[in-house]
Image 1 (cartoon, helix red, strand yellow):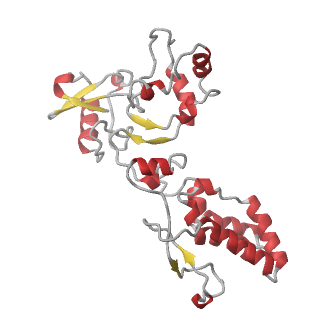
Image 2 (tube, helix red, strand yellow):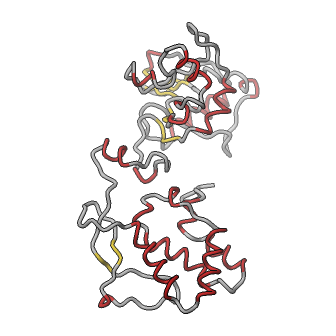
Image 3 (cartoon, helix red, strand yellow):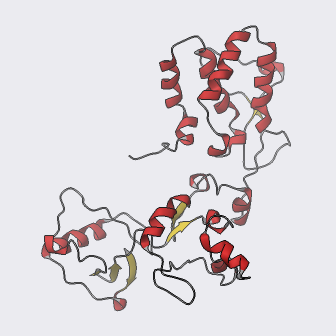
Length: 300
């Protein structure tokens, strides 16, 4: 529902049940966005008048000093349209290039300096009508960042958007650095001995040294693989890790998660000669797999 001034709309005539339900849900919503308000219906304990089922497309409700206008669920949603700007994705891109015209997706920002893209649901100039079915089909290719007006944490952005350029644009940095610390290891792991001089770096908000954090797990894996006495176990663990993969690109700040990746790999080392079901159970509870398969913080 788009939030508007009361002078911009007129309260729609609805059935008593429908009106009461919508007013109550909108009034009690915990949504803090100042441009749009999302509510969930059907919801237990609420009902609507049968005759109103097909008449809710352009409903406007005046509640106190605020007007709520029903809009499309993706109205004012913020998406990353990078995919749709490529030459071989959007059908009109190649045509525009051949005719010497500007990219029809990029023009909104590059030429008009406007972050809002108006969906061409009606013919305009040489742009044909686009049915809403076309949006429903292709919108799954665009990572959703949130809604216009939302506050979104950098770590909660889609993996494709968690880039240095994005962090720097907002005055932050995704650079990582750190100093040596002792960390908890995997079950049955040999105890840490700081006197050996090899310690894990951790990521901080400031660069303290130039140590490449992404190389830590690689160095450790290579050394163990070359010098360990249980070579068969190590080779079986490697084979298992190629089947039950966690993609570094799907993990936020993957380069700095040395211990997390090693702990995940140690699942295969420990269970190399064990039960495959135990391996599946352990990786299912791994925080890396939770983020890799996107069920981290899931409310489903």
